[in-house]
Amino acid sequence: MLLQVSNLRMHFPIRSGVFSRVSGYVRAVDGVSFEIAPGETLGLAGESGCGKTTVGRSILRLLDGAEGEIIFRDSPNLLSLSQNQMRRYRRDIQIIFQDPFSSLNPRLTIASTLIEPMTIFKIGQSRRERRELAAERLREVGLRPDHLDRYPHEFSGGERQRIGIARALTLEPSLIVCDEAVSALDVSVQAQVINLLMELQAARGLSYLFISHALSVVEHISHRVAIMYLGKLVEVAGKEELYQSPLHPYTEALLAAAPIPDPAIRRERHLLEGDVPSPINPPPGCSFHPRCPSCFSPCRSIEPQLTEVRPGHWVACHLETHPDSPRKAR
Image: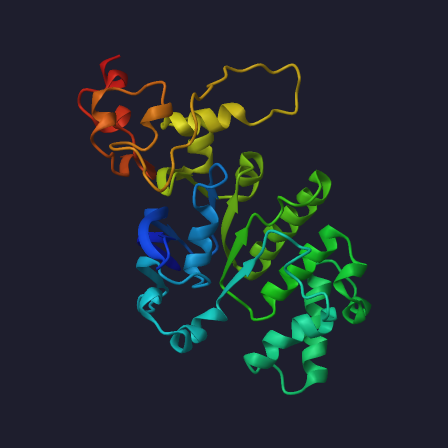
């Protein structure tokens, strides 16, 4: 495996009072485990605020304080490394940020943006050689070499995101975390960027952790999909299996809410009642049970564990694993 994440937790302290004492924790990520193989795209989907971005940034150590285990190839636990020790792995793990407007320094030319990481990691023998490499990266993402001397404000949102992709490619990484990489773009531009990412993956053998709330986009680019709710994974499966035969009621509701671009198609809606519980004080048992239309007794007191119920299909739901499940009784 290229990446193995085990029991990842990220709890943000809540401080209050004159002395800023810790009065509680926001359980943004609470025991997440998954794997990514070489050349694979794992889609991480869920509602806003479920902890998807925190997972991605914890893997890159852009956030401090995470607990658990993150193994990249045969590395030691990345969470146990100092910042100096972590530096040797940063070249292999890159990120594409959500906002193409704020992720580029407006005071730097595109050449400076792309050459800076090469200088830090001593790629190329001279600035001229690094500039040639930067021009090649721009060609690879569909831009021209003469764009190197322009500033970010001279580009559209889609072009800026292509520059962000080029920056991620400058260090020849094996894994790229795509943090809502197309959500800020128009639909037509989204399709172009998604197709570009898939072409780069085929040409370079890249692996992606593709974070998004848009299930149609996740379906298009991913090999496997993980559904996240309130800091936990509730279902993981191959994309065909998950989209055709979802097992968790939350996954069913998400898929039912995704729009279909055909007015002639009608499907059953799965309306969820109530609001997402607070990650400061999650409910006992299954965190989804206050909104679940199929909730039964064990859901309110026993937390379900992510269990493989079919080959390659994992779900954390008592409807599939508990012997008294009403679904099993049918």
